[in-house]
Image (cartoon, rainbow, N blue to C red; front, side):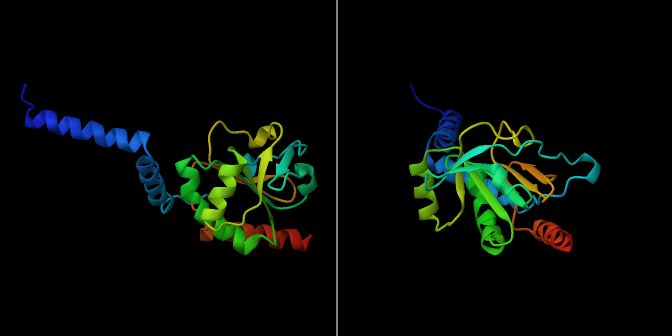
Length: 192
């Protein structure tokens, strides 16, 4: 049986699709495609009338050193919460922007990176990429206002518990828009 030119094209097409879907090459391609998307995706503020308030800050977490932390300890602070995993291409694509934001604002606001992954994999990923992020692992369910069926999911919460920004999917968290919003929240918080 001789394979025609059209059949060869189909075979090559399916092999390429299999490579993208089932191998690390595919993860690399997905990350790169998400990085292109991020260039055009900046989180925006939620309209004042549509902002939800985190009703219950009682959420148990474990930090990367194994210490128990309760989210309530951060109540009254400006907080950026990010749900992510090392196996999630959109999460990996947005991580450089989150790392840059964290580097510049770590002493001004709280960052909570909630990993949906094994600690060994998270530690390896952070070390490989030279990220020094405050990673936590959820011990119980997140507050209902922060619950999402998908990752990445990122929330910017003001010092009154209002969700100012909410983004499901990858975005550029180091954008001028995000920085301006955080600066505005900081100025408002200091003025009180």
